[in-house]
Amino acid sequence: MKIEPVGDAAAIAILGESVDLATVRRVWAVAALARERLGASALDVVPAYASVLVRFDPATTNLAHVMACLRGAAHDGVDAVTLAPRRIVVGACFGGDHGVDLEELASGAGLTPARFIERFCTAEYRVAFLGFLAGFPYLMGLPLELAAARRPAPRDRVPAGSVAIAGTQCGIYPRVSPGGWRLIAQTNAVVFDLAREPAALFAPGDKVRFEPCKSLDTAVAEVMWS
Amino acid sequence: MTWTRSLRVKKPGVLATVQDCGRHGAARFGVSPSGAADWYSARAANLLVGNDPCAALVEITLTGAIFDSPCDVRVAVTGAAAELTIDGRAANAWRSHDVQAGAVVAIGPAQRGARSYLAVDGGLEVPLVLGSASTDLGGAFGGLEGRALRAGDILPLGDVDAASERDPGRIRPALGYAPESIPHWTSATVLRVLPGPHRERLSERALHELARRSYAVSSRSTRQGLSLEGDALELDRPTEIVSAGACAGCVQITGSGLPIVLLAEHQTTGGYATVACVTSADMSRAGQLSASDTVRFEFVTQTDAAHALAAMRRLLGTALPL
Image (cartoon, rainbow over all chains, first blue to last red; front, top):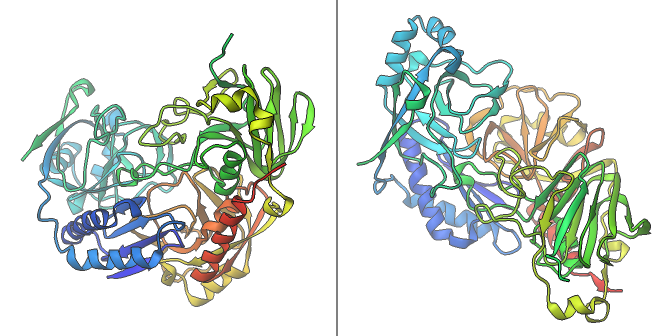
């Protein structure tokens, strides 16, 4: 674990170097504590897989104070025990125009497309954090045999709602965007909507499953509180 | 007859957007802070017209832009070195001007620097999204309908004190900055940097090289970041990291061994090592770079960075009645 300045207007707590549930649970706890303790001193508290970044205004907030607070949060934030995870089932249409890389990924994994989809939909995922695009969930829990490298060059236009794989990561594009992830499916779920409170469908800690749908119209998300 | 106070876009140029000091608190949802690329010039423009330094204003890119208003307004233009005319007459930037209803405010192409800022008294009144007026071009929200300004757009203005509106000259003298408070943009720029959290991803030698080399700003640079071209650094270790939070000023090394510098509308998280970070003071200058400018990095200490920022903030407060 280390606490480092990120220039003169941010600091980061690096809690690990790997993507695993134990580390990210600690990230959630540390981020929550840092947010609570720093209050208005923090412009942003940004959790990721294994780190928590805090942005502040150097005109009003001192770097040493932020680093001390992060150090304390990293010490005390052992596990996100209070986080009550929601369960979200995401309907998605697999393959064809909805997931142009599915066949290639399936054959690369030595599976039929149908078997690939079955394996993908049997797994349970956890939302590690949101980043890249507004509302984009970074999902952990992809079965290792389904992992696939990014495209060498990103596509100019990944359709909104694309369910995508990069390495062992999985994510859902909230809107049309350039992107290098491999596309396997598409959902009609509204992943980010400013007219909604909160705007983001997903939150860190959520448990996610995918369900194959025949038509995009019915490929929506269902949120269940546990 | 009373007009709703507003600003009209006659020509937006290549890219004009509504910006303020940025959208804070939503990075954990993946929402970029966005905001003015050059914080110093944007705040200066607002202060010159009596606004809050973080009021919403127009950021104009490279080619200039033309505006008018159906009512009397006080305006100030700062940022890039560019010709300014009001009703066809040459006018100075970095000072306020009282502009009569219907007069045309024309900001010419940037001769040095990349972005001009136009502030109008009362500030632009667009709906706040997640607490900010800033346009997020990538997310297509904020500013005016989440998009770049177009010819014919009408931007409503906030209210100003009724007394000062009746007699602007007497109640509120024009304000201006002395030359020493006006940044001088050059095509060869040194950006002062602090060591970044993933600097160990570079060898001592490569880190030294980073500070020694000169890079050219690529034409692919946007409000998201500066993409730099030049001799690639020799990498002994991959520069990909487990995705982590990032902020404006992060100097990240891509797989090709070349640096990028994150600007205002950066992604909230990223997978490249941050080996250095541009000081807050010099982020003003970073926001004024454009294609074919050259950049060098110079490592400084936190104390140097704090002094440089304090000096600039002092300069912001030096706008004087003319």
